[in-house]
Structure formats: structure tokens, C-alpha cells
Image (cartoon, rainbow over all chains, first blue to last red; front, side, top):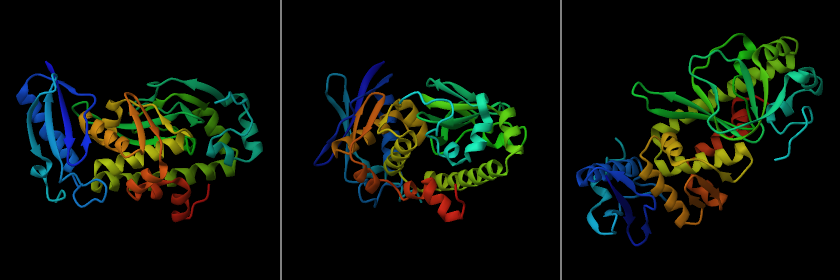
Length: 80
Length: 240
């Protein structure tokens, strides 16, 4: 198990200060996609909380970026 | 929070709404106790043996899924009471009901309460009106969970918890907030962290402090205003 961190960034940053203990990189990928789906769920078009312009950056315990992707990949058409 | 005497004017809206003689008729049967986080009031299916009137803490209602996952479906603070329906006869709890924020609670046995209600028309009337208000609240929350995204729901919930405990310090774990929103813990961390970046809250493990209510209200869904009991009461023509 190792710690993974799921930060958000556009022109600002929202750090994942807590991190999550996961078995390996593929579990981290699944976790990242799950979080992205939860953030994007019905958020598009909301004034304060539209996450569609943000990226998720996944870091390991040493602060190295493992991979990143745009949250817009998880646009569910506003849940419809 | 000071230790209020047994029968002053307790800082619980329902008890405060009672005629003085009804409150006095509870006598020693109504006790003020201090309850810690995690205390179980009733498991789902348990007979309701006591009625809990929060004075400073908060009670949560949960529905459990088949695989053990739990989702919070309501909170009760000083605007209400848990187990009030037992006034109408022996009842079982639909939900798992626990103390989520420790504090002071006025507690009376269901038997004593039922007896008091059978002797007091104003008390019976209050019980019915409160049950109606909670029914309306449950419908608004069902709609909120179905149509609103995580962040406005988190704002709505934080405001509601602060109102119902009378404190801007909300001592809750991330697991709880994750269950409340039905999302992963990381999602809670990110949503709370984003609110902190904007100066709306201060967030550290296990504790959220509301810093800017106006900003939270602007970031919440309309459900916050809808669910305030004074607004619900007005809307359905029920006065408490």
C-alpha cells in the first residue's frame, strides 16, 4: 500500500491535503476516475462549482506527478 | 454550554413551544443528559423507548444498504426531537439513529411521554405539527440528493448543522461527511479544501469551522432556505 494524492488545478490549485492509501497505481487510477465522476456529477453549468475547466493531477508520496487528466473527460451531460 | 436546570426554558424549540404547565407535568421524567458521539438512540427496527430533545448536540438518521453502506438521511438538532412519533402509541424506528455531535439532550421515556401527550391536547397537536414538518423536510432532501451536486449540498448541510447545534464549529469526520454526501473521502477533502481556499470555512481533520455564512449561503442550493423549519412551517401552514 502507498499514499496517493489527487490534486485539482486550473489557474488556482485545490490540494488533496489528506491523500489515500491504495494498493498500486492502477487502484490510484480507478480512485481518481471515481472522484472525477463524483465532482462532475451535475456540476456543469453551476456558477461556483463547475469543475469542467479543471484538471486532476495524481501524485505519489514523493510529490512526483504520475498522471493527469481533464475533469471534462467525465462530463456526464449534467447527469442526463 | 451551561448545564441548564431540569425545567427552565430549555433551548430546544419544541420544549420551548410547550405551555409551561405541560412542561412542568413532565417533572423528573424529563432529564437533561450529556451524550457522547456514537451513542445509539435506536437501531433500525428497535422499539422507540425514549424521546430525545437536542439542546446543544446533533442526532443523525441513517439508512443502511444491503452491503453495509450507510447514508445519512436527516439531522435533528435543537429545532426538533427524535422519537416523537412514539407519543401516538408504540412505534419502531425506521432508521438507525445516533448521536453525531456530542452535547446536552433532554430525554424522556416513551411511556411517560405518551402519557403526557394523552393528557395534553396542545402537546399532541405539537407532535402532529412537527411530524408534518419533518415529512416536508424529507421530501426536500430527497429532491436535493437527486438533483444537486456535491458542493452546494455540502454548503447546505454545513449551514443546517450550524443552525441546528447553535455553533459554527462542526466537529465531524470525513467518513461521516462522505456518507452524508454519498461520495469518496477524497471528494469531501477536495470540496472542503475548495471552500477553504475561498475563505468560506476553515477545515482540518475532523473539524470544520464556518467563517463566512453569506458566502456559504450563496454557494448552497435553495434547499437550505427551503428546509429551515420556520420556512417549512410557513409554507405548509403549520405553526410551531
